[in-house]
Image (cartoon, rainbow, N blue to C red):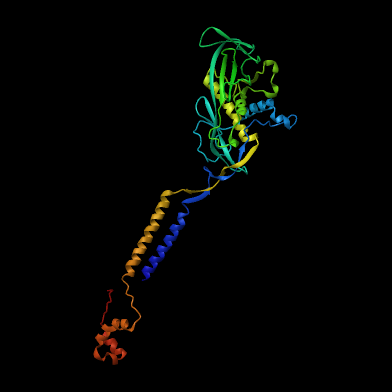
Length: 392
């Protein structure tokens, strides 16, 4: 009996320890990767135009084309501070963490993609959406036969390896070891497409590039609040060459920017049309990203609002599985043992007939005079008597 009680106590203690140990195998933490998307107030960037950071005159200049062109170039330079990667585009609802998750995604040697965010109205939580916009380059490069050292505004270039020279007019002679990138903002090669030209000036190996840079429409936009306007796309495609306020009308509307060879955008590409176009398309998509993430005012509307939830993290799968199996097994053994023992217990009812039936073997051993025998006499007669009761 005592052994059974001790065993029962040990089993209960072991079960409590096992249950307590289960808590060591998991934790409930704040979700770090995926957000829960629910309908609510969401902020979207206004992507109708570039909004200047500083206004020189009055608020009316916010719509000035020159101010927008200058801002687009400034935003493209800001793209150097963005995190770019060639990894796959994250799935929608992935939590965006500035400085820890990528802003721009390289698709191939010609294209970059920016993924728009869904941001809660309080601005505390942002998650990648399924809305994307891309910039694509298509470039050609030609060796410069004459005037490529940066000291002349007239170039002679060779097309298709022929010795025949084709003349190109530059907006400025900026000297050697730099890249002069220029465009005519009002010309177009299609929707959201600009023609961008450049001289990679060098004393030894100068190159001339001509590119079509296209910023496409936003993909998966569901309403007007999520659209990117055509003028903004067109300005972005040529942003690397735009001056805005500093444009010289004597150059027939041609605008240009000079990037020294030690800079990222002026680094010599040595005639690689793909590499040169890749950096210009990066500049274009960077201008879009900077406008969406930093300066442009927000529109508040009902949409997919990201909410940071909680997640269950199981740190020790094997231990948790072992504890659960052990707990269930011990409980099953205890249940079976209890049922077996309970079936062997005789439970009498409370009637006098049941009591008489149990005492019948005793009275039979005492004989006919048992009812008048004294205690010592009864003990003498029954001292060797052994009775066993079984369930029937």
